[in-house]
Amino acid sequence: MTRVFSGIQPSGDLHLGNHLGALVNWVAMQERAECVYCVVDLHAMTSPAEHDPATLRQRTLSAATTLLAVGVDPQRSILFVQSHVHEHAECTWLLNCIAGFGELRKMPQFKDKSAGKGESVSVGLFDYPVLQSADILLYHADEVPVGEDQRHHIELARDLGQRFNHRFAPDDPVFTLPRAIHPPAAARVMDLQEPSNKMSKSTSSDKGVVYLLDDPTRIAKKIRAAVTDSATDIRYDREAKPGVSNLLEILAAATGRSIDELVVEHDGHGYGSFKAAVAEAVVELLRPVQQRHAALAADPGEVSRTLADGAARAREVAAPTLLRAKQAMGMLDAGIVREGHGW
Ligand code: AQP
Image (tube, protein in one colour):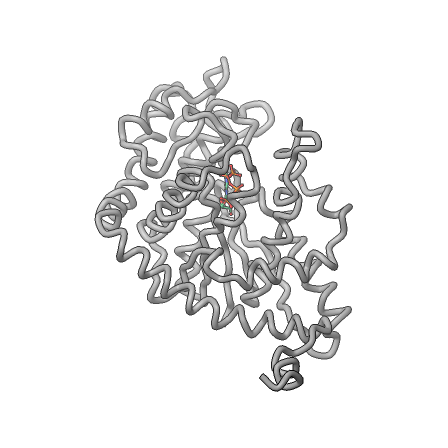
């Protein structure tokens, strides 16, 4: 059966970009694959200026609650918190030793997030894609459902897996080589205020982001205020009409209709009614998620128990993979050392 892995950072409240770009696929994939989903708290510490321990704890639990509300089913899938499975950090070190400085320096997300930070940029931010490679490779994932922004990171995981197998395990590969899976629409949801930038937890302004838990009035207000352009025609053109194109993609993803069909329906009626239709579709899309979230948030102990169970199941897969990787790289078996000392 196909194995799927994906993760989400608790670096802020989850938003429509996360949902349409990744989570919708996460939920759908449970129908046809063994899925491993993770709240990647170690990744959320890579920007020291934004790392507040109490906030990280609260956001980690909140992200897990939101994933359950969106439809991740812990009976069918494994849902856990990254730092609960220490194999991720350990495997990162092994992969660090075969990853190149040059290939990490070129990663678009590192370039964006380190811009203007000079020498103070954290080693964690630089190493972020290697930790992500370890996340994926530990679970033998065939497919990784992600938004477009993650394309290069998944390619790196594939390259590192291949390099490792070739060098250390040519006859009996340790790692499965993953591929990225992108959604058919809204693979890259843009910031409502700056439609040439992606909607982002940490870099967008509040007005540019629809959070999954925003109430309907707030959602409608943000979409009404979305930046468009001075013309009135409604057509899909990412270069000339980034704001309108973004809203068309959101509407298509939220309703399951094609962009062509939506253009025919809305062109000629002005931006006001078009934005109202987008707002209504997003409100309806998020209504059941918000209802389920309210019920789950009333019992955080149950969410924590679900995560503990998920971590135990995750370790059953990750620990043997790490052991094989260590043996292939020449780490001495711990049992032999104990025998030698008579312990
Ligand atoms: N704007 C987006 N459009 C489509 N997909 C998106 N994703 C994120 N933003 C968009 C997808 O959501 C998944 C989880 O992302 P992440 O939390 O691991 O980190 P990210 O990609 O860096 O997302 P953010 O919101 O921009 O977080 P920060 O600001 O902390 O960096 C991924 O599959 C991603 O593709």
